[in-house]
Image (cartoon, rainbow, N blue to C red; front, side, top):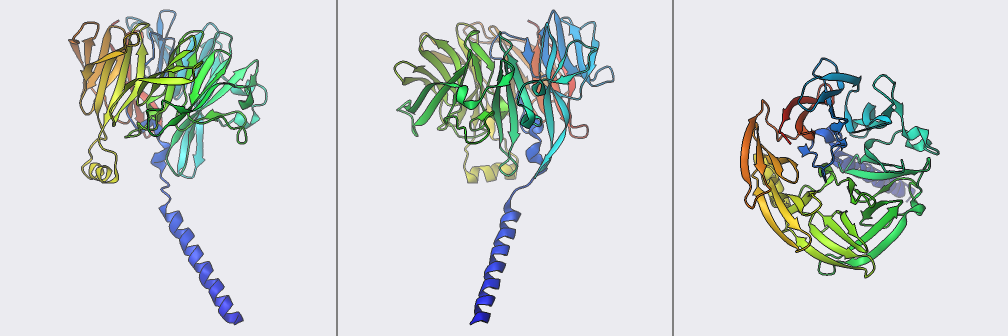
Amino acid sequence: MLKRKSRSSVLIALILLLCVMMLGACIPYDQSFNDIDARIFSAHMKPCSNDETGKKAVLYDERIYYLSGELGQQGIYSMLLDGSDIRFEFPVEDIRAIQINDDGFFYSGYRNTATNSNGTYRLFRLYHRKDRTQAPYDVIVQFHDTADLTDANIWDFYFDSNDNLFVRSVEQFSISSDTTLFLLGFVNGAVVPKTDYQVLTNDDIVFQKDYPRESLFIYRTQDQYFILSNPIVSYSDEKIIGSRVSIALFDDALQRQVLPVDNLFLSRGDFSDFPIRWIVRRSQSHILIAGDNGLADYDLDAKAGEQFIRFPKRENLFAIYDSGNDLLLLTRRFRRFDLLSISIRGLFSVESIKGESLYRFNPETGQSRRLIKLGEKQAFLSVDDHFAAVAKGKQILIYDISTEKPELLRTIDLNHTIVDPSNEVDSAGGWLFLYRFNEETQRDELIEKVNIGA
């Protein structure tokens, strides 16, 4: 009897061991999950007419500052608006965000590599240089109680008018390959704890015509507003706030997005029933809310929402340009997102994105119309009140969108194919900067810059 029990125990142990081994074999550990800079083509679409902040390029005091290696050393360069007087400013391997003001250079710069179960990933920190000759220092460690934030991977940042700092850090989850943006607030020299964020609404049945009904949580600290799809919980990390895959920041004093939703972190398929939402405008108790499935108005006093625009399934909103009057809406159109369709696309190397569209929306009338519809492997590079720059193959097409019907003004030929997962684009001062992620050097490198005009 004892032998039988012993054999049974051994058999159960072997079965459990086999299950663990099989489960481990199914976990998709893959270095490519960490390579977020080569996951999807990305053009930094600025939410308004503001070149003072950027991912790779900014405008300050009539000079454009941008990441480059054109004079033989990788770092930040500057030039005049006509492209002359190119000057090397300081060395840095790569940046993910940059801002320049009277206090000097602030940038999310590459520090080193870190590791998770998928391999290595790049770690960026927020640095400050008083001027081009000063050595950089890590900004976050200067605040109180930040010992556990020394390895926060900084994506981008924003200083408000009171010098309060808001930072988004990126977390790369090993198994699922998801990447999530989290928010950190620093006010009066210290981290803002989760309990200090003011809850403006916690509506559990917002937009009742939608299915499934999704909760809406709007928070505020100082003049900064943001939306979560779940309430802030304090039982985990007391400092970092996050929700699903992205979080955006709206400055109420400036009445504009300051940390917009980033294209890289939005869904890449048919997820319009579970929208990621962000604030576009606020007027008294009314908040204009964007989601990847459309636009809606929410009344804080009445605790009620009304959908203005709801895009069809497989068409998701990913960026908005606010002209002060109309809104320019940029969407991506997707192919079917089911197992069979994904398998077929993988077999024949078919893109999941069918193309992009540009709409003009009038918030006063609630009317919208499509201006431009792009096909596969085409993308918008920049939009403003009057012009839209479009990538098509190795060409940039400049459209006048201020008229009833968009007019193609000119075409600019480049040496490289623009829309590629390893590429990204930023703009400043009437110039476009095209970067490509170099697998060998593990950094974004400038491959072309082009003057597209004002």
